[in-house]
Image (cartoon, rainbow, N blue to C red):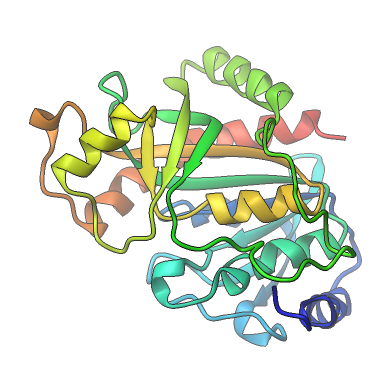
Length: 276
């Protein structure tokens, strides 16, 4: 861990608060093709990542690269519209830096979304999966290095990484609105290439339901600093059984995510009403 990170977090947060008159306790990280939820924010204040000290610059075209503050329904929220990925060449500390800044700003609960491939035969493209656990196969960990006790414990427990009460409420909301949903295990790889058929099969064998290139580093850091986590994936493409695999492009992933986004937005808007 960067020994100057604490000071950098403070500097970034101090810059942001000069533009705000609210202090939201709920944060959101929006993944590939899912950033349009931010357009539903009322009384919005938008801060570009490029303006924030120590923030990196997103190089993925589908990620807007901005922090949006305002009201969603009856709740004050802050949205990270776009994230950073390890495959972009950033360190894990850079990838997860925005999550630490959210914590410094007063965020207590974080909702994290992504688009992911399905390695569960029961999942179809467009399904919404509430994450109940993950398997980390990334080659680096954002908590690696000297630990700053001001940011969190040296050895954070991950036995209950994804909040069970929020999962239960999300399932209730989805069922009420006739939205196809499941609970599943997300497997994180570094990317940027999509996986081979043998890799999809391996992920299924080890207990994975979904595979993607994000989310887990952010969850590790969120739990490290004591935040409550709700994770959700939109199935962008079906990768299991192997006979179901079709060639996938980034554009097709975005298209499925865009089509599913209104359902996810409905779930997010309803579930935050139950967060204190």
